Each structure stands twice: as C-alpha cells, then as structure tokens.
Image (cartoon, rainbow, N blue to C red; front, side):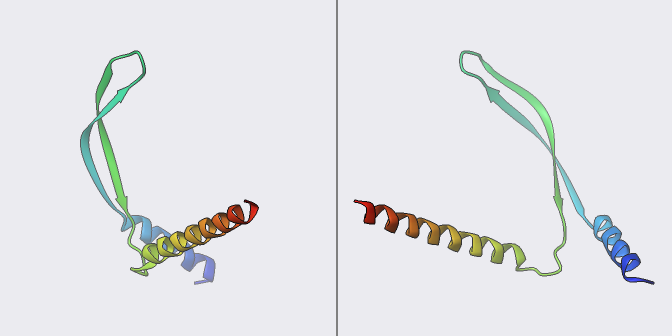
Length: 82
C-alpha cells in the first residue's frame, strides 16, 4: 500500500468511528415588534475521536494566552499615548 492509500483508509476509518447523538429540542426566536416563534428542531452532535486527548485543551490554552498578551500590548500602547 502506498502512502496515499493508507491516508485515505485512515480517513474512512475515522469517519466511520465518529459518534452521532441526535437531540430533539425547541428553537425559540423573536424579532423586535413581533411575537416569539417556537419550532421543534433536531440537533445532531458529532464527536470525532482525537488521537491526542489533550489537543483541544492545549489549543484553547494557547489561544487564551495569545489574547491576554494582545490585550496587555494594546493596554500598554494606549497608556503610552496619554
């Protein structure tokens, strides 16, 4: 098997192992000047197993640190202008 065939096989296996959970719920919407509208909807949650369990947490932690750093830099830049 070549590398491309192995990659495609892994992709198909991952799609097949994705877990799907369906939830019936109610969608509430309202607009200014109009009444509230309710309708029954079905929400589908798909979980995809990750080969590295801590990936999403690490990504979120890095993103939060980047935002904090950007805010600090912006605050310093603003305080230097005054």
